[in-house]
Image (cartoon, rainbow, N blue to C red):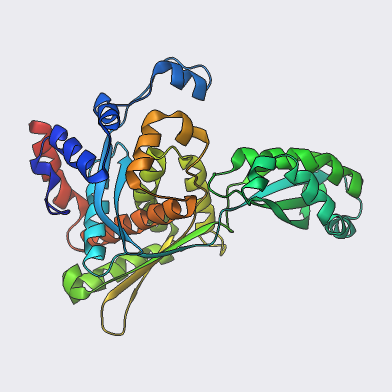
Length: 382
């Protein structure tokens, strides 16, 4: 079957079988996919507090997502109609023009330690940097396994901060978390070095926690779509007008970014990653200039075609956490055939860009309701 053949003409069972064959799932994995939810109550009880049951959401799949020349089946867990279709239609446009091209800056997380009651904050920052080697050695004692894998804390930053409750010093550990999201690792490191920092500065340590604004952990994706594939020069004009609206109006930018995260967040959810962290980082990054902007950018090429890009903080992992404990998250992650957190992050960002591409195209040529509501009503009637 062609990768972009309409799935809607197939039953859910037929789509399961097609996906299982395309992903090379084992009989045991196919059975888990058929179970629906795939989370035993006893496993759920080990994941969060006060468990009383489980809650299932649909799993959709995007076919034909081409990133750096590799084709992916991309699972998406969400409740909103036509989100999966938008991502797949955007992926189809991109695939016809060479797919998405992506890079990743590295799995670097920031861990912050807040020191208050510091009388000379600027001098205290210099003292912290003078003890950089000692701080890093102590931090890495907190996670020798990560260090053995080539990760760990590798740099220290310090900055004074004037606030309404007085001056403070913020120390930031830069930590390579490798293929883990790394929240637990960097939090533990922050707690480990806090007493030393208090001793160095003569202040009092309070917060010891990661930042979800992962500016050193960016997935960058670009795509070029010819005007012929997109639907003509008028469609290019419409997409650029829609983007200009979002770029200059935060009310529109908010909804535009929500639409982009319609693509990214369901993939993170499917693979057991922290969607709240991903979305918080995305919206904070969208405001880094002091004005809330779209997290995608669209431009016209010299030949009149459409080019777009996304730059997104991407703190995701393929080991540990829910990816290890949730059977279905593990299965869906294996279905993608990604080999690193970097690769997963690039595919997630590409899915967000695909979602935004088709959404803007649809809004510029008639609207989401006109395109998708009739097909949704037909499905619900049957």
